[in-house]
Image (cartoon, rainbow, N blue to C red; front, side, top):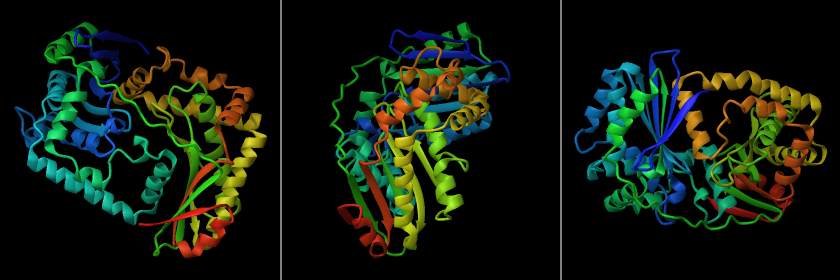
Length: 429
């Protein structure tokens, strides 16, 4: 993959990729600011700022923004994660100037109308309230809270009801002014473009964006896990128990990333994985079981997720714990490793077919400080993983004796069984 990089005088990092297969262009502006940069009193601030970007600027109302992108058959989206926020747009390459101007407009000049703020605040709070009917969402929130304590990763980027209610228009404006800076951003353009012409247009469009001082941040340490830290969230109407367990995983730039990606495929990704085979196919205790590493700028969680009838929930949990212990003590086989490699050899090319997909991969590479040839060498890195690499990663990261365990269930059905594993914290919704 051939691309060019440039840094404008304002500090804006620009990455351009010529991709001439289709007359399409994709642009993504990543701001290195996410929910991790909020204060403890205002979880949800970064998310609501991002959602409001499309709701009107100094020169365009919300409807005009939508009509502008719809008229040319393009797309314009926003997203807020733990570590970063993004504005993404795609269209035919003949409309490049239009979508570049539009992206610049919504990212740099939102007006944050008071009425729109209240609409999005109410909408987000309603979404959070609806989560209380979803056992998967409940388990996810409590799992993160138990794992991360006071760290900002303890809540999802969407925030909390208390935090959202504490957010004022002044705080929204201040957050945007403080963090949405060119020297805190990366702009990626992928498509049927010419490097020199594209860079000239970017300089013209973003030339007036003034750099600022990016605030430094000190994060609280993540709490240590000693033994099994168990919480039951009581939801009396449930006949099935949602099970979420895990511990601290890795950051995105971890040297064992590829080894752990392959390990996870073997253990808990898909119907051929150990976890699915044991819990679903052999024992018939669930219809789904999976695991994953949620990699972030800082260490994200390693998690296992499954569910079962209340009467078999503890049996299912014990089976998952047993499989983790077997993995820790026995590792994987050569056959399993080769099968996992084959999956990624076939799957990865499908993830870099379109300009938008390539833009996303490029910006991840840049944001996380990965090697310049990371995308080109991706499959080489997959194939280079050895049994020794897998064994070392298992020993370093997997810790089945020290885990956070979250169970969302009718508590009286599972409480005694859970107590056999250790001290249990009981929470009401």
